[in-house]
Length: 82
Image (tube, rainbow, N blue to C red; front, top):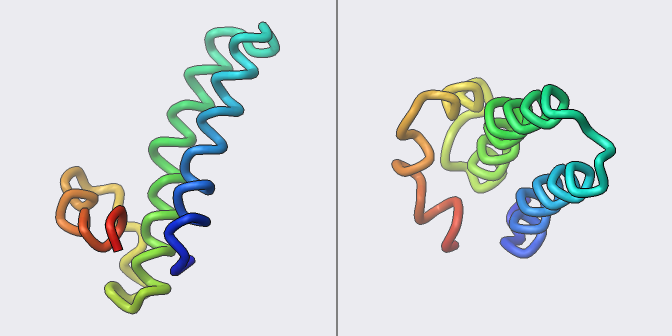
């Protein structure tokens, strides 16, 4: 996932879908919160770690470390600007 456009599409589309499903009353509040936590804790961790791995910045075994608070800021430039 070296292409920044694909990366932004990958991280923005799911949150848009979750919000849309909530607005159309397809989700109750517990499902909404559950999907939101899944997105923030599991999906974003994997996508951000995969991007850093694809750019040869971190080894594959360290993808899980993106769950540690502050790791996103440590790699901010590599994740969002390059």
